[in-house]
Image (cartoon, rainbow, N blue to C red; front, side):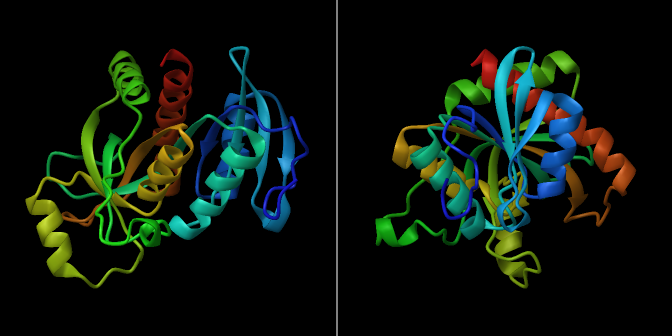
Length: 235
């Protein structure tokens, strides 16, 4: 048991899916896992452990933003022995060719800063996904016939961003999408020698202004979760 995770020793699986929303963790656990057990509800950040095709899996909410994600990723790896962590969440498309419902597999995650920035001082650390997870996720998406894109994303410190000039440059340099957690997840995983990947669903579009309603989000998120689970055990 840690400060932020109330699970007992042995209740967290080595493979952890991390949605930002704790209620998405509950939905995913009850939709995709057999015999899901609530193992954490500290501060309302729900976590469940169950089985997917015989493999033991934990689905733990991470909260919104890199500071919150960093707390859970650190404790999951350091105190509970998690070795594979996959973020499942939504993102905003930043390229015309990336459409609503599409899956984005984050090969790299740029950021202006993360909670780990102070460790590197003058160094611009380049957070990246685990190659084998990335490859397995791309294969899983292809086999499902799910439109998907592999490349760099941007992890933002803010949701209501007023840096139009930065957004313009990110789009210009081919950034696929924006979200708020992956850069710190990749950095923490690298620190501990764990595997990490972000599998994201495009829920809105920064260029066109289009967005998914709640029903459409749930249909799209099903593909995302299945891809993440398949990648975790095929890599």
